[in-house]
Image 1: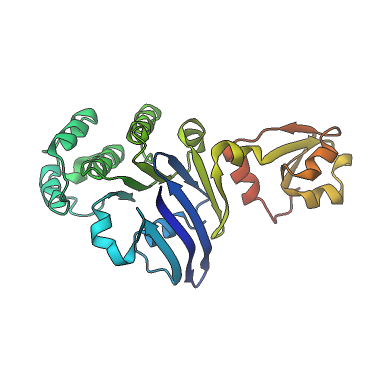
Image 2: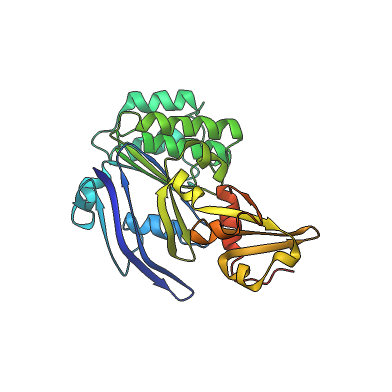
Length: 287
């Protein structure tokens, strides 16, 4: 069953256009949503939740059209979008009392468990918490009302490596029963290589691909060779390339063309970060 289905989502701004964004997420999986700054990740997530009014498109969550069942469905969605910068002078305990009133399935036991796990001091004011602790508190709120779908924008931002790893382990535990799913955006692609099941990659407002992590990475290769080997024909086959004193390296799709050239060039499997970097260089001139 698909917990989330996004079809042909469009949103236009004067200098940016989210164009025909489509992808889906079945229950029981973790999906990483990646792209450079300004690619459209946050706009997409906010449009899914109707926090940004899309120009067109269709959103279905748990088998129901979202806009027609928004209040009902938001009970089953755990959300974290950006830093908590509201009521910063209020104590954590006071904010929690306000938030919990909105959720019919709020669980004080789950909330207390995560507060203890993250060492959250409820007597502190929000402004007294570090960036990392604010992130942990926001996540605690998202995790405490028995949601089935988690939509999180940069949830590991501001966390140290150990805390990030702990959080990602929590995501894995959430989906173990096969009934919940996590969609989260991040710039820390190394986290996704360890924990994500699926990758959705957005570039300049368009979805490049949405597939399993391994299929996504295996659909690209980094090609390396000498400068005399960098022909105009090869340039056309690559997403982008870089020159250095030793030759060149470039990213290309592993399609029929790669079989024709792999005997003449060095080929390597890229990382998620490699793929993003080469797409960011697309269309530029490399010295």
